[in-house]
Image 1 (cartoon, rainbow, N blue to C red):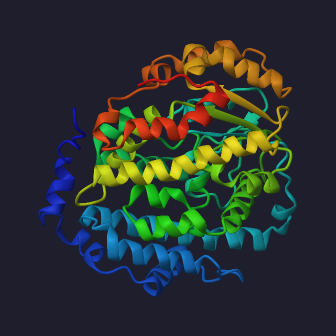
Image 2 (cartoon, rainbow, N blue to C red):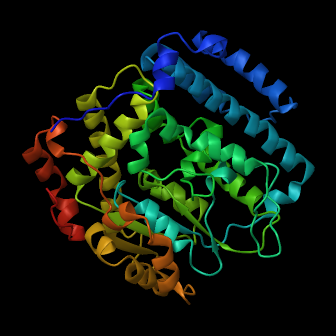
Length: 416
C-alpha cells in the first residue's frame, strides 16, 4: 500500500476554498515578529518580557522558515499564528508569576522519572502508566498549554475546575479536527499527560514546531543549536506547576531527550530514566505516518519520502546517542531501565511494576490501576496503526546494517 492522507475535513476544505470568511483574513497576512510581539502584549495585558531575550532569535528563524518553506494552507497559517501568540503570552504570564513570587525559583525538582527512547515504542503509554504510581504526577496537556498562574489543587491534590482545562481541551483536540485519522495514532486531550517539548515551546526551541510544520531550515538549526535555554525553561515551568501542589515525583517524557542526554542529566542529575526501544524500521514507518498526518493538517502537501529521510536522520542520531550513552556509562544500570517494545506490549503491568521496583517506587495496587487505565484503549494494548515500511522510499537493507549495532546491543527483534 502507499500512504494516503485521506480527504480533509469539510470545514478545512471550505476555508482553503475561500469560504471561511473574514475570520481567516489575518491568517493570510505575512507573519511579522514585531507585530506578533505587540499582539501578544495586548492579549496578555502585560508588557514585561524580562531581561532574557535569547528566544527572539529562534522565533525569527521559525517565522522565516514558515514563510519561506512551509507552504501552509490558510487553516495551517491560522493555526501556527495562534501557537506563536499563545507561546508569547505564556512567556509574559510566566515572567509575571515569577516576579510576583520569586520563591518559584527555589522549588526543587527531585529525582524525576523521565521516559524517553524511540518514538512509537510505547513511550506515551509508558508515561501514562508510570504516572499511576502512588506519589507521582505527570504534567497534563492543559498545564503545559497555560502554566501561569500555577494551578491550585483541591484537598486530594487534583485540579478539577480550572477554567483553562476546557479551553485547552478544545485547543489540543484541533490536531484531530484538522485530520480525524490522527485520533487513531495518538491520544489528545487536556487531561492527557504531555511531552516536555510542549513546555519548551515558549523558547521556540522545540521539536513540536518542527514536527507539525514543514520547516526544514528551522529543523536543521534546531538539530544543532544549544538546547540549554529550552531545558532551563522546562525546569522553570515544572517549578511553577508544583508551587501550590503537594510534593509528588514528576513523571516526564520526550523521545527527543535522547538527543540531549548530557544536558538532561545536568538539569536533573538524580533523574531516573526509562528508555523505550523498538525496531528502528518499524518505528520510522510509524512515526513518518504520524508526522505526515500532522503536516497534512497544516500544509498544502506532504513529501512523504523526504519526510521519511528527515525522520530517519533525526531519530537515527538519537539512537546513536543512547547507544553511546549506555556504552560509555553516562547512563548507568542503576539510573536507567531499558524496555523493549515487544516485552512492554506483552505485559504492560509487569514491566511498569519492575521499573517501579528498580527505582524503589511504591507500586501498591498498580496492577489493578493499569488494567483499569488500559481498558477500552486497544491502541495502547497493540501499539499499532496502519503503516508500511515500503511506503518510505528507503534502502531497507542499508538501514538494517546501519542500525545493527543498536539492535544487537539492546536485543531488539526485527518487526519487518
